[in-house]
Image 1 (cartoon, rainbow, N blue to C red):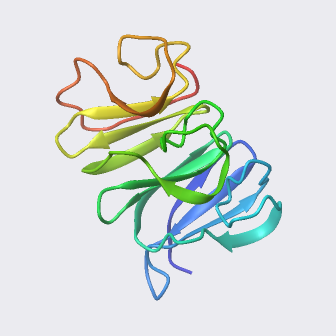
Image 2: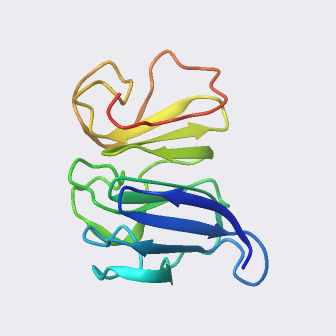
Image 3: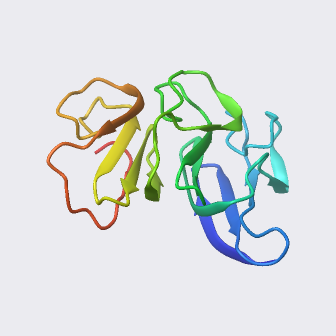
Length: 166
């Protein structure tokens, strides 16, 4: 009950709860080979399970094999595959539990790409992290980043979309 947002990855889906006692929570279901369901396991689920520790989500995005949520304090938590740093926690370790994105606050929107993630900040700038083989982080390099980097030359953004690899 009370689903206000649904996000779908390539083999998993998640929903953000917006009303009632579970408001701010997130539930996920489907393939969990990379921990993208966030329930602390690697077990595939045919029904929805609660994401551990997420109780104040205000936005949600899923793609590929990882998922991220903006929290009420304007930080971001991510979980799942992290082979190219797409969780933003400074590592390349898969995480079946949500981790906080390093050094990122003031987030108003999030979008998860297949192997990277981007966030729109309330100051209308953007930060991205993860795979950057095609320059998708927008920092002028093709080096992947384990933590958020500023998108150069972008100062008046109103929305953000990460896409697959562009």
